[in-house]
Length: 390
Image (cartoon, rainbow, N blue to C red; front, side, top):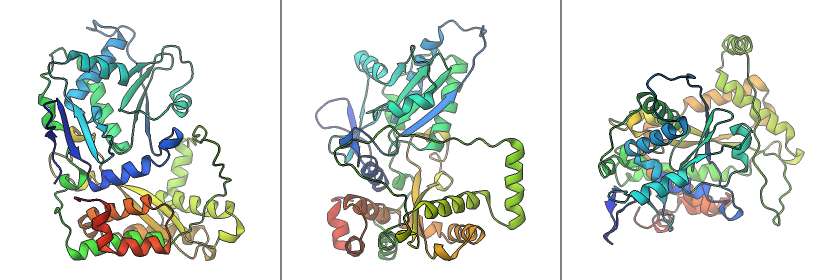
């Protein structure tokens, strides 16, 4: 079990080791750090409107946002946690008796872009990876942009966190927090919150390692063509947004029900078929491999299932391999997706989470999956050697 503890140098720094899932996320998001980018940054956009003359409000909007952000840190100290230089541990700097530390944190994490005219969706693509979770306010568009590395929080957690943020805003809390108390609310690693054994049973260790190695052995996947240019850094990320009207949404839901598939399966099948269509001819018959995120909050016990622990990684990758795509049309592909999702044994998967997370990190560390990688992941001695202490 990994627990928070005060560092031995008499500083106000609290540390704990990353859990296996956090290790895997850290490895995923740092693959492009050397290029000034970071995979899987959470960019969460909210647009809000307040009354022109809010009753009882005594402070300017900018100041109230800042005070709410500060209060949010007291309730959710994980928003101020950073990754250690060794990328193996997490650090939290207490601000007890250090007003300057709090001001420095606010200066780095609460940003007002008063001169920005573009919407947040256009702004975040140009921003560099944040060291800490940050909140940007765009007055001209009435938007807030929450940004964080993915090892700290997931999308569902952002919704829970910002719901609480606006509760604080609405209440205009005036009581001063007792800094130091928030230490008790620093969250554990996901595996500890799930109350998983510190050592998986031989059966679950074998299952977790084989689950990952089988995924690695299925490569190369059907994919879109690209021309790597080692001498050029990645450009700005782009996104496409398709908004369906209520009428179109109802039509889509009705059509899916008529043929006996879910909307999720329909969208997934469409992505698979379109990817195969756009892939080079020589790989169109390959397996289709994907990584879908599964929210584990419903499996957490109290108090971690509640919004009080919004800021912790509560999702895990579900690794999918779909074969024989060349022989399937849309409906057959959608049904294959549904059968795959229903075949997951969540109890076994959760009990195998520790070894599976470590094996997944191994695969990421070693680069592109291959038969050799898969065989090394199956070797339990390599599993123990790769991340000492886990």
